[in-house]
Length: 139
Image (cartoon, rainbow, N blue to C red):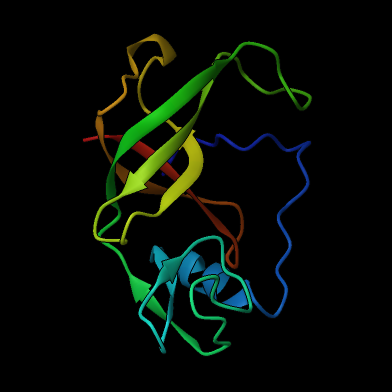
């Protein structure tokens, strides 16, 4: 993604032992979800124990990066210095994820043009060589 969306005044996300593999995949521009190896339940955000079967064993499933807008809101007040408004915070239903929905931003379209059910695809915002943030744009 060539245009910067994340304001400089916002703190960078931090990783822990549970989320680090997700952030590493993101830095490679791969959208992944955690999958329980015992019951195959997929989950996001990553967590140490499966909410379905309580197993602590998991791997990572790569997704296509496509989905559709499940719901959204348009923000008209900045939450950080120098943040451009309006912007869209959306819940995207991820294709092939087993029903996972991800909170994100919709970019590349005027805020008043976003619609529920709109097909979208992931686009990566490179914050540094080790940090990329997924955003979604209309297909």
